[in-house]
Amino acid sequence: MSEAKRVLTFGTFDIFHYGHARLLERAKDYGDLLIVGISTDQLNYSKKNRYPFYSQGERLHIVSCMRFVDHVFYEESLELKRDYIQQYNADVLVMGDDWKGRFDYCNDLCEVVYLERTPAISTTGIIEVVRSKNIEPALV
Image (cartoon, rainbow, N blue to C red; front, side):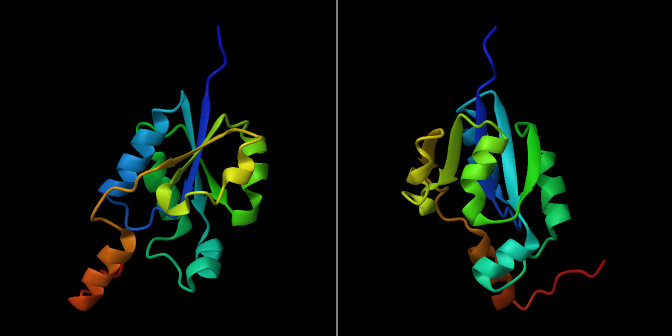
């Protein structure tokens, strides 16, 4: 019996949408187990100077509910990609093509694949539409 092929991917997965689902579904096509790193709230703030709409716990829960996701963890730093690849014994690193070339330095540890983004949808675009219509999120 051969060992399961492990696929690793990362993302914020805020305002979860069709493009996110397609990325995860297509990433799973590269192996048997899909492991997903969810960017922490602090990592997102350091990258974008804003916190995600949904908390890291909520985002982790949403992604973990996807049938093709086998394991979810928190990504603390973009600089730890190699450590995460080794920690999870990944055979393939899958990223969106908006990161094309940025993780080629990991090719000595695993195969690196960049998937084309789903056209005409993005979290930033959704947030901008909501803000332009002055829609306030419901308070829990």
